[in-house]
Length: 353
Image 1 (cartoon, rainbow, N blue to C red):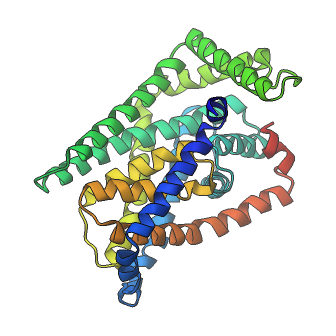
Image 2 (cartoon, rainbow, N blue to C red):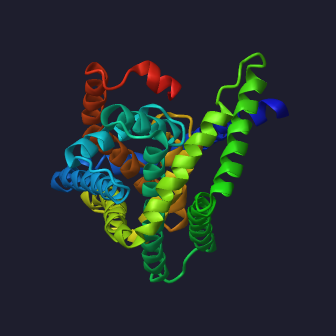
């Protein structure tokens, strides 16, 4: 049993969360039913605001990529990057892997379409994530202040804010520390490459070396070179950082307008914290779009801030449904168009080649 848990810890965490969510739904079924019974009173025009909010979010994402690529000497089409961002979101929802599949897809998409190196594309994508995290720290501070204004804040809430902040800072600066020096990149990523090969061999004992360490070492060199270009032009990072902030704000805004549509003007700080925890937890989800994990954790976090599960769970589900309907169909169309036009093929995506 213990060995099974080691091999399938992500699945175990997901199953536990789904069971906990089911129990939560059962315990609050009367409150949930009451919330849904008032659907006729929902302000539809608030829900429609999700469309322009998400359009602005993808605009910000495309501009982040465009500015970062400009810094390292590659002029990229805004329209192309907007489409690629929509495709990336679709892939991250359909192929759950903590964003790893998305990184592979984005790298393939730009390598095939624009003939860019894998290391450069990967680093640009990772730098975008780092900027997202740093920008969200500012939003999280604002959320903490908003929560503090409530007066009697649950100690668990304070702990959650602190833990999330420290974790995000650690991940951001840890990544920058590793890529800041060639020897650290080689040491860390070669260790990671060998660990992945070892893990695969433990599952498939007779399999050959899945990731070639020598080839990986060459990619790490390009990785470091791209980072040095960004570092040398750090003053130009201001613009992509501002767009990262816009992207984070619009993500939270898309969730909050659903609360407004239901007539629930809850503390924005609670929504910010719940959004941060739920999205971070998506890293261990093996289910499409983090379904179950996202809703469960968001409901629990909001409950610690005084927002009833009978209110937060139906609203979170409504947000997820609307957000999916707005983003996924267009991402699906663009994704399949890229494949049908020969820009990518499903075999490449599956292998990450």
